[in-house]
Image (cartoon, rainbow, N blue to C red; front, side, top):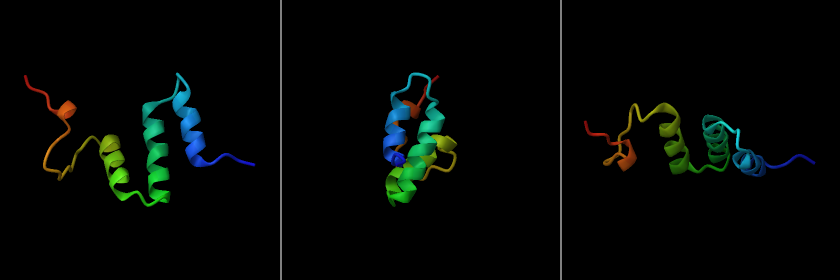
Length: 66
């Protein structure tokens, strides 16, 4: 019996050598399957660098002053 996608994501997240990008991609696929629209959009912004972000506020960790 194969493991569910969520269990696979959890196992991958526990590995010390896992790629963050791969984890976010896996989470995005799961969000789409479960129709978690808001979470899926957030994951897309993480993957694409907030290029076309339409929100009112940027995440505080994305604001850099120089």
